[in-house]
Amino acid sequence: MNVQIMTLRNVQDIVTELVRIGAPEAHLEHMSARGLHRCVRIWGAGGLAARELHDAMLAAGGSAALPDNPCPASCDLLLFGTYDNFRRMAAYLPENDPCLAQCAEQINDAILYPESDPAPITCRGFTLLWGQRTHVMGILNTTPDSFFAGSRKPGFSDAVESARAMILAGADIIDIGGESTRPGADPVPEDVERERTAPVIEAIRKEFPDILISIDTYKSAIAAAALDAGADIINDISALRMDKALAKVAARANCPVCLMHMQGEPRNMQKEPRYDKDVVGEIIAFLEERMDAALDAGISEDNIILDPGIGFGKTVEHNLEIMSRLDEFRALGRPVLLGASRKRFIGAVLGLPDEARRLEGSLAVAALGAAKHADIIRVHDVPETVKAVRMADAIVRKKRTLEKRGQ
Image 1 (tube, rainbow, N blue to C red):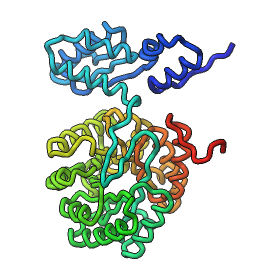
Image 2: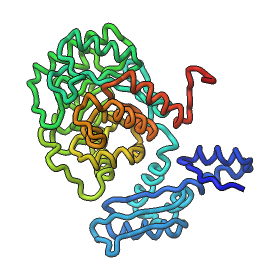
Image 3: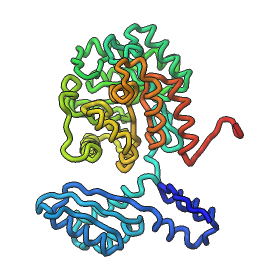
Image 4: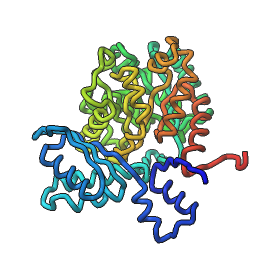
């Protein structure tokens, strides 16, 4: 007789193991619902609502925890239980409270986040399917001052050649930026940023009509010019906060937009960044609010990509916490972009102040990101990262596609 501890992350994992041992088919749904355990944190519930949720979870057979003295205005609580407990919890909530009913619906969606992949994004006739593999976004900085010297391609010919090399190495998306967003960076004039990006986008689009191109900007005028030149995606570090007109540009173009979390601005974001309780929870709350703002501006939910913003207003410990809990962002229901390539926290952990020596650390982060179901990995080193995430995908993705069977 042997004992094995199983790591079962979702209902499909549980069903697979039930089938493996020959459990009756009639029991699969019932038993899998009882085998999926989750812990749900609810932020900022009113004291009465928190008590109702607490009691409903206990009545449904789960567990719950409240503060010793719940604040009447706002408090947090934790709910523990199986999917079956959470599913039955709604029956014990007051029927005439729409707020609690909505909360129960959100909980139900959140606990099932590994079960289904976000809706695909379609642009320029291409469809990005999430969940089957990790997509690689190559960084093309047409700037003289980006933090990693190896990524600087300020000349037109060098920029186009760099894009060509990344595409041939397997990049799915080329992300073009004409203004550095390194810590302490100052803005550049719009005419300079436009001249650095639009001609390069035009050249790449002409040579590679099937590649996806994103413009890394928070400025509406630059985004509009980039889309006119052939870009497909807007990648905004400010999540539509620094230029209110950018949301209108994205909505009018019906194009994908990446919303990133950043505390402060590039020039001051690394001056003592602080989070009150939980860095991951606060970033999730921020991204939920920015998603709502995007929807209000007319941007389709299916066009939203989310980025927790590694290195943008975070300490080394904050970045490590985000990485260790990256899969929690999947509960937002949208694809997750991870941009950690060669960043300072990797140098801090490995004792490597020189960005040029951080390749191995970046590949480790990329592989872990793929294992935690990041949908897009934004990187400087495309050939190496493509190989790393393909290997990670073969291990962790359920829909495995091997180019050479039996190898």
